[in-house]
Image 1 (cartoon, rainbow, N blue to C red):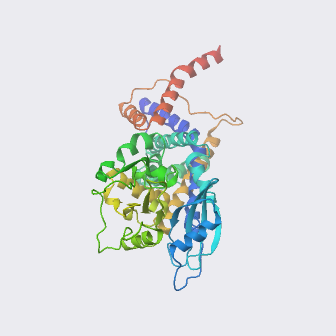
Image 2 (image 1 turned 90 degrees about the horizontal axis):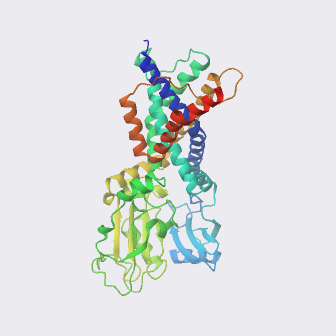
Image 3 (image 1 turned 60 degrees about the horizontal axis):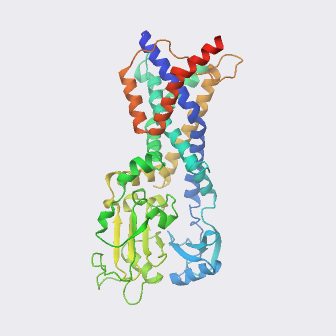
Length: 466
């Protein structure tokens, strides 16, 4: 079917945008796919926190306080901050000790209280891949570069589907690669069909990844989707968030709680609005001040089975915090997310937050992050690996297509030619405007390229001709 001049001009314009977006996106997408695959398999095989260190099960474990005392001996000047319970009977317990040189992790045999290993927190291969994946090891500037890549990736998807859309063959034939072709036509067919089949999956990964990003996620989405402090019902509050209190600002607590203020313990307050533990219930507050063993028993009694995290009170107003979430690889089920805060003086439950308490966006992110990180079991690891390999293939085949299209014997990164007479196309304009408004980093880039094409590039060409 022969295209009209107007449609041919639109096709060339879309192709030009696809080229510009790909030019920036390709190196970042290869990095994100490679580091994402590495994180998937490291977490599945060895565990994110080194928690898959095996031990020989025995009839009885040592008291948790005894295990903790052994861990503290590894760093006598440090402060015990966290206990990560083993997910199975043949795995070690993990303790975090805060020291002047940063947080340290101590691996302890729960049956003998013997120290098996110690290492700085977040110092393994998983963490290196994670830091590359989230910030390129550059901090906020790296986060912005990746947010721009993800935003332009959405533009790449939209323009790619338009370029794939069949014009000279049936839709049914367009769904299959044309393996009988040669040269650039063969690579174009593989590139477009692969992109079509993973487009929804890639869009999901881009949106869920952007929800972690500093601008679109932190400023535009997360702020109004967090767990509301008002649900605490008037209990004492601290002046720090969950992310700051539990993980030093890192994104390792449930997305919906990162920006939510932590409850506080108050030795002089009467917490009548808290949830007292009934006398018939095993209580961390029965008798003297709650201690590690009593809190652990209570956690088991209220449903924290298998792997869970116990954060100890830090400072006079700190609280005991019990938590389990799929984002921290505690469980395979994001709907079982739960975090419970207990007053360090009275033993009252100050807050017991579960998946059902999250906002709609918070629930979507709990499910989305589990899918994004592949923490739902081996099937999700394999599925995410397939998507990552497909993304790498798209990037490599895109480079091959450019290489085969360039003028013979020339190296320049030549963009497709700009149409001389580009008609106004309302649908395309609306899509570009909507994308620019929804994703600010993409909007800024689109505006910059439009400025280049409309004003700067013509002037430079005129000077070159003169």
